[in-house]
Length: 462
Image (cartoon, rainbow, N blue to C red):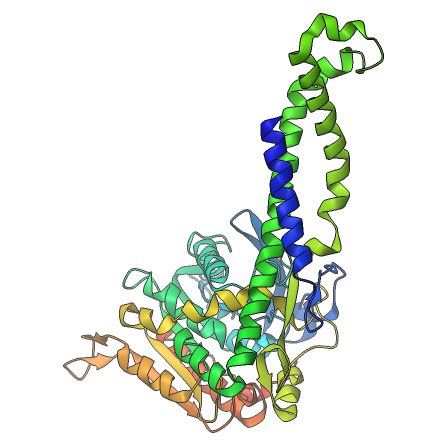
């Protein structure tokens, strides 16, 4: 009874804390996943007239299934062998891609994958756990730690031959943008020299401390504290929900061990002689068991109470709103300009509020000196979210290579600077310029002898 009483006290304390912190009107609560397939994820076949095919594939990340698109170039005709048959088919280098903060693969990544696949590269574009077509609950759990685990799982899957024999596991590249532009640098820094062919880091998030300082300057201290409060609010709800689930699991285990005995014993009070036969200890045990059964019947609806639903914060919003990124009306339009009309998974522009407790400690720039693969950085000169000066600093931190054909050493990095804002880099002439540079860089490091040439400007529409 003592252990049961302690659990009840903990549960009551958790619920009391939650009730003492009422829902915030600028946050939303709960997220129902929509599993209906969307047009954006339809397969692409040779009949579509493109120089590649696309199909959905899946891989495991920490016991959860991640969904991905696999773009495969149509194989070129092989010269006939001595017996008149075609020669052995060449393997395709593979570029692994994923999106930035709170986003998923159908939000503009097809434009880049289209260009890469059109240039003869296989491309795997995946959704993080809890986003898009990937499984996982609660939905839209944005977390640097979790996203890095998904990147590592995707890389292991490709390097282990999970895509099949026609894909070259020795020529693998990473591509990330915005928040994922930092992820690819961290993951690349963990790989042995020579294990990655190339890395593209587009308008990357690099320094959590500097980003937090800039956020406080823009918002003011009070608004910044509201962000932290939203994170604490969500974390409290998660802790209470987890505790109740643990209590339920413990009660189930205890009930299972006593179930047979309770089913055979007469209910207390039905026969007074029961007390005489079993004594006080038996009576206490029976009451304890009956209480557990009553709690088990009560807990399922309790665990789904609105007070336990996770709290979500806007990824983007206007200046003055409670949002991770505060944008002007023009910037907000640019953010949504690359989005489809339908979203996989029922996407909404929100993420779990607990993200605000993790992001300031995430600084991928610390990993840059350990990256041994060639890196292309893309920056936007008028980017207020991921400043160009930080990207320049990261490019300078890359170690030098002793493989310079002209003798001496040279930097492993290349830097392309676009004269635009963060979200304009995904649109129009800036998108074309960035993608042309990326294609040239990837082909140079992943297929240096290739003859394939596709005008990138023809591949910029979804």
